[in-house]
Length: 372
Image (tube, rainbow, N blue to C red):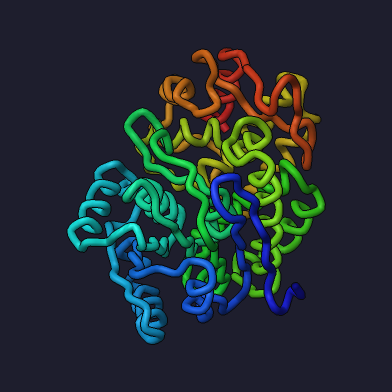
């Protein structure tokens, strides 16, 4: 489709019909029609955190009720601290109490936390009901809502309990982003930087040139960036839906990021952790002779333009971070594995898309982040 009319990206899945991701300013207004075409239901369970529901819930409820669709809201406290098994249990219990059946559809309205939690509710409720993702944060539009990963955090680490549950539809309306604070836009753009770093150097260049406009939520560059990130992620998850191999490349920067988050009990924003994780994993690759020299400095420059710190957050001691690395989902035989760049725009592939790294090398890189 032409850019003015929006972009539709189709994502292939082996566990249901292929689904569209529609990137278009104002597409939310078409929600009732699209639900009728792609996700019809007797009733809709609208799951959202209390902050997002306060901003957008009434509009969505009115859109659906105005066309005769039955919808009931289910909210939970905003924040990563709510991404737990307790929240999942409470939401499923409330849906059971409200007598939602297998002819229901879950609508996930919100950011990455809501998408993960509501998706996990849908994956498990009555052994699985459809979910429609309506991301309202930039990170959810660019990354979290595409690919079917759902889940919750545990004391042992991030996203360790969950399921693969592809949505029926993703509506990415960039107009939502205009309500976000500048700092939250920056958090989402970290994932766009990751997509460019692992797969598309010209896209990374474009992001860097457009960063000021993106942080101001200017419509054209923002819609272009969301669409390109969705295209890149869709190309990966369509090839490797269950993360058996190639999809691991999307974890660049996340191995250290998830351990950093766990070490500070998720007190650091996810985007900040990933931005730092990318820089440190690029330094790690350079130290091992895998990644081209200068890669980490270029990534540092882009991350700095997002006003994200390049050092470990208070309380994130290297030893504590190391203790969480073994719980990473790529770990094999108790050994941590990392996705490393060969250069910007390309991943280094050895036997697999991730590789074992000596613990001493990881500790050395973490130590440099303390003193930076």
